[in-house]
Every structure is written in C-alpha cells, then in structure tokens.
Amino acid sequence: MTEKNKITTALSPDLNEILKKNKEQVKKSGQARLVLGKEQHNIAKSALSPHALKVIDGLTKAGFKAYLVGGCIRDLLTGKTPKDFDVSTNATPEQVRRVFSNSRIIGRRFKIVHVVYGKDIIEVTTFRSSKQIPAKRQSDGSGMLVRDNVYGRNIQEDAERRDFTINAIYYDVKKNELLDFHGGLYDLCHGTIDIIGDPAVRYAEDPVRMIRALRFSAKLGFKMSRRTASPIKEMGINLNQVSNARLFEEVNKLFLTGHGLESFKILNRYGVFEILFPGYRNFGNNPIVSEFIEYALASSDERFQQDKRNMPHFLYAVMLWSIFQERVFSLQQSNDSRITPISVRRIAERAFSEVIEEQNQVTAIPMSSYISMKNTWTLQLLLTDISEEDKCAALASKSYFRGAFDFFKLRSRFEPYLTRFVEFWQPYYNESSRQAELSKAKNEEKEQSRFSKKDKAVKARTGRDSSSGFESEDAAEKNDRLARARAWRISMNLEP
Image (cartoon, rainbow, N blue to C red; front, top):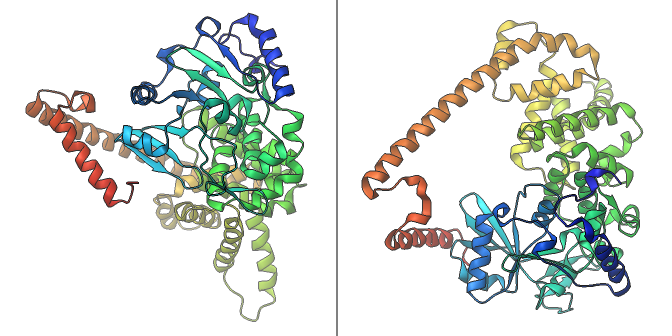
C-alpha cells in the first residue's frame, strides 16, 4: 500500500485493530456499529462549513436528528478540504423545506433539498430505507430503480442505502463522534473502494454506481475490492439504460475534475469507455488515438491543478476527433464518385452532425457545447489556409479562435505537418490572449467600481456595508427579502 492510501493524522494510530475487528464483523453480519469519540479523531469544527453547521443547528432545534455524511467526511479524514458538505437527517424533504425558507426540493427519483446560502449550497437528504414499498420504490424490468423515496428511521437504515463504505461514515457535530456501520473507516485507511450490499443488485438498481466506483478509484488512487470490481465488465452494458443527460454529467465528473487520465485508463480496463463513447470501438487498439486522448487528458488534469476551468466542449472535441476524421474520410471517398461533388465544408458539416447525433444517444451534449465543438472543428480546416493576411487577422479576431488554436496545437504533437501552421498562428494567439487579459482587467475594474458605489449607497442608507450580507438585516428587511424571494420561487414553480 502506498503512503497516499493511508490516513496518518485524522485517526489515532492505535485504532487499526479496532477497525479491523469491526470490518470482520461487518463481513459476518452485514453491518456493525462503530463509534469513535473526539479523543480518537482530530476533525476540527473550524474545518466545517459554517453553512452546514447552520443547517444542522436549525434541524436540531426543530427536533430532528442531523449528521454530516459522505464525501466531506472522507475528505476531512484524508486531510483534504471538502468541496461540498452533505447533511443526512430524519426530517422529510417537506419538513426540511419548512425549517429553511432559503431551500428548495429537487428531484423525483430521489427527493433531496438544497439549502441555499448565496453560491454555497448544502444538500440535505432524508434517511433512506431498504424496505419495499411499491408506491415509493419502483424499479423497471432490469431492476433499475426509477423512484426511491422510502424513508428510514435512523442512520443504520440510511447507511444500508449508501453506495460505498467510505461514503457511509457519519459525523455527529453535537457529540463530536464518528459513526460507521460498514467498515468504511477500515477501508478508508487501507485505500479500498467497497460497495455496500450485493454488488449485482446494487449495480442493477443504479448502473451509475459502476461509474462512481471507477471514478473514486481514479480520483483517490484507491483499489476496488474484488467483489466491487468483478461484476463491472459484465454489467457495464446496463449503463445504456441511464438517461443521456445524467451520463453527460457523469462524464464531466470523470474527465474534467483533475483525474481524467486515470479515469480513461481504468474505464478502458473495465470496458466502460467504449460504452460511454461507442464510436471509440473502432479505435480501441490504435495506440496513436489513445496517446492523443491521454496527452489531452494529462494537460486537462494539469489545468485543473492550476485552478483553470476545463470545458466539456473541448473534452468532446478530443474524444470524438478521430471518429470525426474517419467519418470525413469515408464521406470524401463517396463524394469522389458523385457526378456533382459537394464541398469539403459540407462534408465536414455532415460528418459532424452524424458523429454528434450518435454520441447524443449516450450523453446529451448541450447546445452551447455543440456550437463550441462545431466552431473548434470548423477552424481546424481553416487554420491550414494562411495565404491571405486579411483573412488570417479576421479569423484570429473570432471569440473561439484561442480554444480552436489550443486544439490545433494539441493535434500538431501527433500530426507533425501542422507545426509550421502553429508557428504562423502563435503570434496571433499571443496577441489575442493579451487583449483578452486587458478586457478582463477592465471588466473587473468596472465590477469593483459598481460594488463600491453600491457599498456607499447602502452605508448612507443603513450605516452598514452591503458586504455584511443577510446576517446584519433587521426584521423588516429580512421579511421583505424573503417575501420577494418566495414570490420569485412561486413564479418559477419552485414552491412544493
């Protein structure tokens, strides 16, 4: 086991035997309660989201139980800063909604509540149960759950419905205790992804759990337990039953959040990549195509580490490029035998439409990404024409020039004949980047000026800075704000 798979500071070093015995009991009985007190872990309340604490406090005062659970606890225990904080409670979504006016119920398949604090959203889920209640838990013929709103009485029942043991560790903020029912702490310490319950049943209920297992393995560097990994190759085909909108989001999580290269490798190992990108089947044994994708993903991972955004359209432009090229070549061959041949651009447009239409069957590519992809690929044809200086300047002025050039430059590493064109366009790219930075600085200056004026106006009226937010509102201001927000939610059909 590598050092990165060990917890060295979050738990007391003398707990290994206790965790091991707990895991052995879980294997025998299916569940075994383990409670670690504040002297056995070092989770500091200062590391917790103040908004999450506010949600827990509100639910507790309303007479409900509430715990932090999931990825935030996993991250805290492995020394990382959690991105999101999730709360689990015995309050129903409707009850949570009544406690927090700044909340909304979302989802039909699984109802959850988002408590909104500006840009910060705390996700609140009600304890779930594995009991079979037909009106509230429904599955299709394959066993996939299409509705699962059977609520549990306690966290023991809720823990059974969670996907992996490392995501079923609860933190009781009030008592400063960790609660574990499936050996998640042992698995976390040993770098293991282990599914809760019967793997075949859990994957049939929700095939996306297979993607999540592979993603956590890639993201955390953990190994999957044998029972977790073994059904994936056979059951991966069940992913075809998942909505294309949901799979689009899952693909983004796999490849745009800093572990894309490892995700690509492990998806290929288990035969899942070609399920998500069916056109890739014809290229699975082509080392150049794989190297192109791997290089692009390594670059995207590096961008993520530098706090730069990775865009879905660029990801799909990379993943589908070889498929697009093959389709263009095939259409050109057919075009050569036509009495009236069509233009290269028309061929490219037709190839693009066909490739995207096929991919959309699996992952629903939004129109904004569709347009950006089309612009990126269209410019690949134009960037090899450097004969007229005026046209080159006009091309470089387009808003999507830099992204298209980045893709062109990426291609040049694998298509050496493009190098001279890259050298030609590089000064245009540099100037475009400089202009973009200047424009960004001006916009930030305008925004700062606007906020400064707002601060002065608010301070003149109330004696407070506008940055003080909701905390300093008086009762009248708060009621007015909530009334306006409630009216807006009603108008947008967000009220339950």
